[in-house]
Amino acid sequence: MPPRFLTRGNASTILSALENILPALNVENLVALTAAVDVVVLFLGSDLAGSCHRAKEAIAELFRAHNELAMDSRRADVIGVVVLVDGHCAAHVLHRELEHTFAGDQLVGRLFDRVDLRFAVRPCEHPAGIA
Image 1: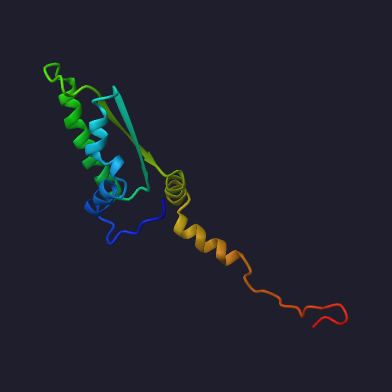
Image 2: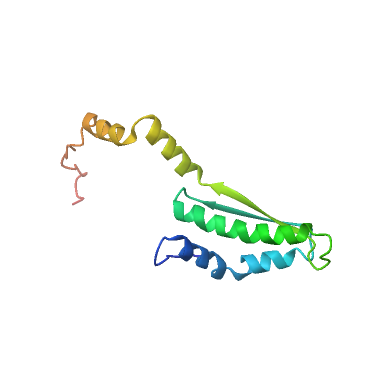
């Protein structure tokens, strides 16, 4: 699947994209799968942005409502449950931890102070006959 670009990075835009880009994995279709299987699992990985978290919360709420119906023994039409696994990008988590632990904004500045970024350019010597 090619990358997709969103017009905004807010939760409602992210949620709309998740619902429309791949219809087979939208909430309605995942819930419909529970008529055929006992458990449907959706892993949603993302960075640590608040908007991604809010979009996941909205999906979790829809799944929770379905799961409550599934647990009601009087409803024969609702069989299985949907499980949402909330995943985070390991690179973003590591970056955040390093930034907080080592005062990353100061660390990067100190690194560049210590590195000599000047380049010595020497004329290239070619073998005879090659320009």
